[in-house]
Length: 327
Image (tube, rainbow, N blue to C red):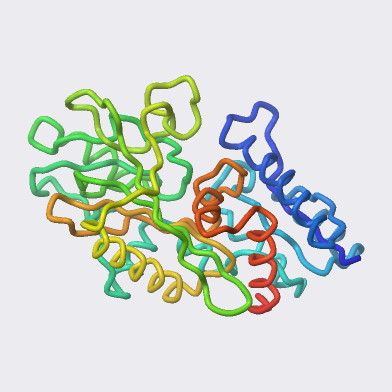
């Protein structure tokens, strides 16, 4: 039987729901890998990488399923896990260290979107933020964090003279940036690798139902993690579309696949879009290690193509070996 290690971030003493989610992912992956003919063990990854190095060197697994989302609670260190695995020359799932680093840094990722000719909202970061910015709707975002961490309704604001002070706060905080807020529809496109070509999964639209006037149509932290909140109950994922959306959906798929190839991603990824009132899509960000919990959007999209959880894991493993993600 082949040996595998499921690598996850070390859990803090008082974990929030988004941190605990990695344990659900690990449990689901373990069960699927057993069905795929693997024996697996979990290993925790933190800044004491020597422990992980020694464990992997001794065990000599055939593959590592990398589920590390943060390192010591810091999203900006997510690339350290694949870096270690590359040094050990062990095949692993997901993207290599460089594309994972670039895609996780939202400002670097947006710069790469421009290089690839992909549409993305205007943004301002650090010294590019000035008091002479155009009036309009903006959203304050964290540079590194995923899972809508730090995003609230107050993150969206209209920039005029009365809100100039917000510019100075963001300008001085290198962990934040400003992005043009696109009012309109929100879409997620998931892509999964495999032995051959990547597969673009059916698109999902997040529909904001019964939102009161003035409330931003965004996925904030509550909508993803607080099951008792209004946002969680009323931000609903849909896979049903009319023929009027056919052209738009093809654009979203084409952009996602271009981004996958342009970033040299591997394993699986999710691409988040906003579509304005003129039906123009804007790529917001790419998540190179989206959630693989059984109830996550990625797994729901895979199910629409007939891929059950075992089949998803099989494709991700096949991608790891096909790419032989070693630098």
